Length: 463
Image 1 (spheres, rainbow, N blue to C red):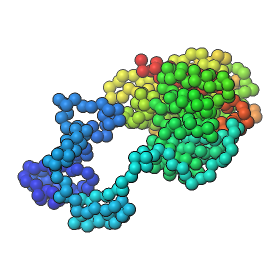
Image 2 (image 1 turned 120 degrees about the vertical axis):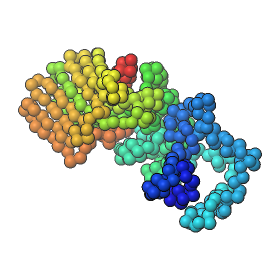
Image 3 (image 1 turned 180 degrees about the vertical axis):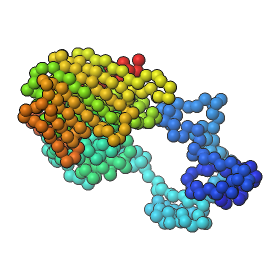
């Protein structure tokens, strides 16, 4: 930066492309009145998901040189010879000697370093499946859960895949959009195969179960494809983003179950948290209507995050609020008959989003409950709190660590050393249902009910 300022004329401009140290000296800029600007790398459109991911271009009359048009111009100039880059190439290395190439980066004589890749056949370059160094079981029957996973993100790789493995599932094929992560996590968790194509799951007769842990907008179609292939399905929430998608899933589920027992389960793991299991057991002896308050200190997620995009993530009520709608349905043990919902309104300085909402559910037995789903709270307050009022007694659960009973003759308190939201127990229950030839642990009608109500509530808030 200092050298650039010394080279610059008075009232000149320095544009930063890429990443360098920014130890700016005031005198360099003050004496010459130099302007400093940081470039958004490739040009307008960079880091804008509306442009890069969704393919929406900027009108040429308003933005002449977008990221794409910059690339096109440079490639055209290179193709025609107008832009000669040969003069800046100082070294060439085969990819096998890439370490030597990186060793030159501190060499002031190295300007442009080219890595040469060997010529490969189209079959090798387009290969979508790799057999890993693991021996898969030779005999697979319907009672042995042979699982194919779609997705290996943080939750899948750190929580769900290990939970399935611990529960006794045979891990067959791991499908990811990028092959590198598939091979890495496939080897780590002893999968037989890594792939980038979901058809490798649908067409594999060994695989009788599919676990879907992908981005929310992909869930519904992948569930339908799995059901049409006759596979048991475990899908992370949400099940679907629209009522139309739910209808398609329902048709595929009933068609798949005409001749075989095919399970469909959503990862509503909070049902299996030790504290919730205890609450459910205590409440079963009380048939009178219950009043429930769930306070979810959800925390803020930036508006540009994919979860907030209604077309991709479904928004936070469909994407995450469904957990608590299902959990309340589970604790009450009766159908949802009605609901109301409200959220923070249009006030100056406050961005309108459905992640600051209050939802009230009414149930068939006369119970009701309110879910306060709030993204504007503080981290010092518990993230999740559940309070159940019933027959002159109260149960209060904080953060899946402490459950306290007030007015319960047989129960006072239950504590855990660490938080347990039931992820392992949820996976185990699903795997055991396959081994034992039983129906899905969470009844299909409850899965569909919770999913449908979540979508309807989100639609209500948006309208």
